[in-house]
Structures are given as structure tokens and as C-alpha cells.
Image (cartoon, rainbow, N blue to C red; front, side, top):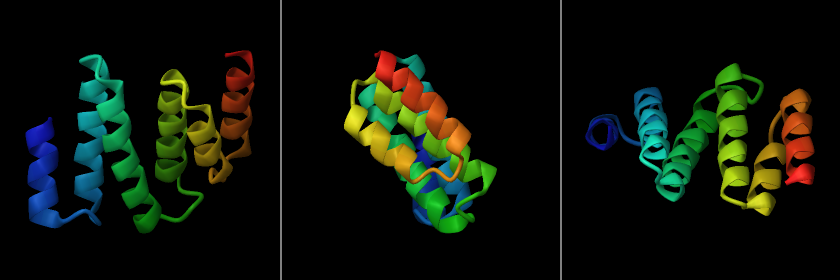
Length: 104
């Protein structure tokens, strides 16, 4: 998946929906390969791009932020998880993840 993400980046640039899509797929592959730190970096790039391309309340943005926050929580990065959720327009997702963080 990394080649597809890199190809989209070189062809379309970072500020393109296809680049973000392939970066999210690459992040998923990296999680399956037990490389969560690299996955978090890829997912953060994708989420930043989606924030530029879609309205703040778009399901694409909300799901991306929520997934990144969950990954940060898994990595033990509670402060970064809280910062991600603070920018999430979906209070339900934010409350769910904050509840999980308080029991971790």
C-alpha cells in the first residue's frame, strides 16, 4: 500500500482526496503489520488533508479524527488523543473516546 500512497502523492500532491484515501489504506496495512507508530504518521497526514478538503462536520473528517484518536490512545499518547478529539465536531465520538481514556 505504501507504493500506492506514494504514487498518489507524486501524481496528485498532498491536498487531494485520492492521496488521503491511499494514505488511510496504508495506515490500515501498517496496523496489521504491527507498525502502529508509522500508521499514526500516515493517518495523521490523511486526516490533515481531509480537514482541508471537507467541511468540519463531514463524516469523512469525523471518522478520520476518531480513528486517529483511537490509534493515539492505543499507543498511549493520551495528550495527542485529547487534542484530536478537541477538534472533533462529533461530541458523541469524543465522549466515547474520552470515557475509554479515563479507564486506560
